[in-house]
Image 1 (cartoon, rainbow, N blue to C red):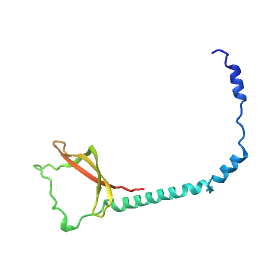
Image 2 (image 1 turned 90 degrees about the vertical axis):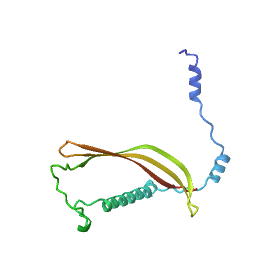
Image 3 (image 1 turned 120 degrees about the vertical axis):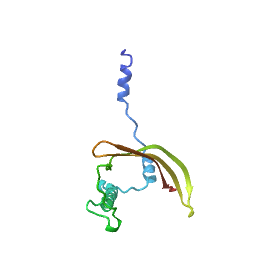
Length: 156
């Protein structure tokens, strides 16, 4: 680059903004609403407590609704035990997948009580593979499934 702008750069570096007039600063101070400075701990306290409460509820519900390993159905509802004969292979589930292939927003719907919700539809294909423990046979079952959710619409 050429040195043509060296003098201009030196002059620009020496420039300083002018001080504000006292009338302007007084007027700005009078129009500014009073602010209360809370400590940073108080500002973050409520969101952190809310997240902790949500985590506790999730953990408690996970424990309550998790199937027990030792729980047995009542004797009256149990299926009769079937012994695996050499002619009847016993199939066990080997793999299960569910593939989401479509999601659509079906718009806003109104319920009988005049509340509004957005209708969301998810389409899946569930595939379950059953195998013979001896490894001689397998069975694959594919079933389409739709899930419909209603997300509440809140007007602000």
